[in-house]
Length: 118
Image 1 (spheres, rainbow, N blue to C red):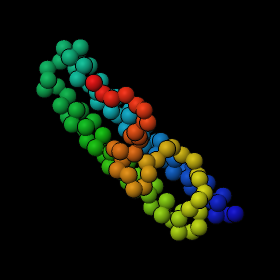
Image 2: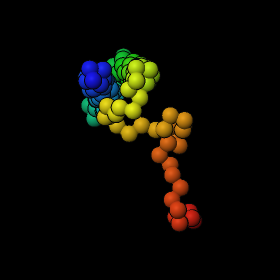
Image 3: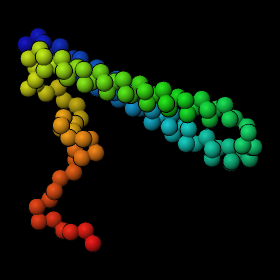
């Protein structure tokens, strides 16, 4: 029972970490997308602030790498979950693709009696 409780606590913190990284990635991406229009509206030369564009883009890359790291952590925790006898315990979170299905195919399903594309 204690493992199950601890598993839920770890899962909650994992989901919070995933959400924080996604939130930061989204916020920096929005800032980066805003910069070119702000430069144009301010009637500044394209050479002004190039370092800002560079750093902003590098930050997106760093956050993307951090996201990859937390996804790998999630997978490793799933392996631990299975190895300690909690395979059939759901800790919540979001829908995940089936383990043996490539991610781009995970949500595609054939609809019986569906219409053919024109």
